[in-house]
Image 1 (cartoon, rainbow, N blue to C red):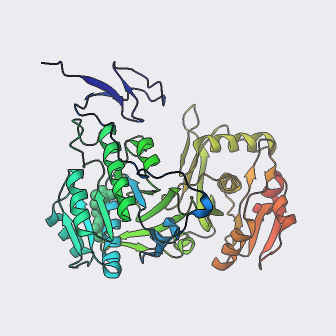
Image 2: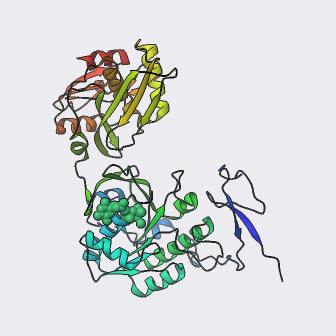
Image 3: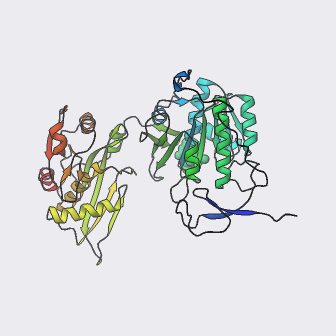
Amino acid sequence: MSKLKTVYQCQACGFASPKWLGKCPDCGAWNSFTEERESPKTLRAKPSLAGSAAPQPLSAITGATEQRSPVGISELDRVLGGGLVNGAIVLIGGDPGIGKSTLILQAVGKIAEQFGTVLYVSGEESPEQIKLRAERLNINSDHILLLPETVIENVISYSAEMKPSVLVIDSIQTVYTEDLSSAPGSVGQIRESAAKLMYYAKKAQVPVFLIGHVTKEGAIAGPRVLEHIVDTVLYFEGDRGHPYRILRTVKNRFGSTNEIGVFEMSDSGLSEVLNPSELFLAERPENVSGSAVIASIEGTRPLLVEIQALVSPTSFGMPRRTSMGVDFNRVNLLVAVLEKKAGINLGGMDVFINVVGGFKILEPALDLGIIAAMVSSFREVPVHPKTIVFGEVGLSGEVRAVAQAEQRLKEAEKIGFTTAIIPKGNADRLKDRSGLTIQGVKDVEEALEYIRR
Ligand code: TYD
Ligand code: MG
């Protein structure tokens, strides 16, 4: 009898090694190897998309019309780049309990109404559980077929028989192929199952939604392998204490990335938030120090968000710096710039920064907003409630121009702001000044002059 062969596989990238390793030589992940039984069957005969086709000139290829079918949930269609494309595989990743299954069930409801049969494969919940959720969401249809199945070959053969308009797999971590003996959820299984699905989706021209869980570190389990295979990666994020959820495009072969869709979770499911700026600013206290509104851009979409800062004398030897929703290092950097370039010494102060609504903002235009909020809190002087700020701050205290200034200003005007403090570089080049009073500032010191007023 031959000895059972095992390999160690990196759960982050799929690298295989005959021995256990502490650090993956391929992707650099630590402690990511687990032992998996090597597959007895050879997997060499991979299905190929092209079959036995010979090379052909690009100009001779016809029939490449990209047909988009809008799902009917505009925030979802936006991140998909306009709607579903036949044969496209869309991965929706997110933390457990964030609302992936809810979102997909609502989408399925709309799709079934418009395009007919949808096959919903669930390896996580029983049909009864899904029914209960559907009742809460007011979804009922003969065209939604539930299939509690985890063997990918069976899923594909059911799907091939039924020819659904859309196939949903909830979740990719629960399905497995019988070709491999490793456990469901391991990198090998995820890769093989996804590859089989992709082959099926492209051949049968069926759009497929995959739901994927996210590991503690924030990556979709089996991340790289999966992200390469699928056409679109959407990331569902948000803070569980807040009702807002953001669906973000991370990769899209059929549209722009960095688009976002905004949803609100209620007791009857997710509803679209068509005007997020208004909603995020609804509870903003006016004339309170330590709050500033910035005009941010997410993809093509301007978004006004409130930044709050609390600056107070520290009661310990070491001042505390905490940031939520913004980069911690960025805050430290801005504190240093304030000290050196504007003479505002926060050395003995605790500094807390928070982006309201559980948002995460990484773009540099946020800098001036953080500065405004910190200084406002430090001096206990509110920023004028109808003023917005944006701009990148450099290490020598200069305020640098940012992209898409016009769009930011237009959104601010729409929501009712009257003044904008923006980089001089932007102010000088504005084509459309909106109806706002615009203050172009070249450095932090100058910005603080205007913020104080
Ligand atoms: P779910 O879609 O099951 O999350 P995932 O599939 O990402 O794990 O959503 C679970 C959470 O959503 C749960 O905590 C309850 C909440 N929820 C509502 O608040 N309202 C609703 O109508 C539904 C269906 C769920
Ligand atoms: Mg779920």
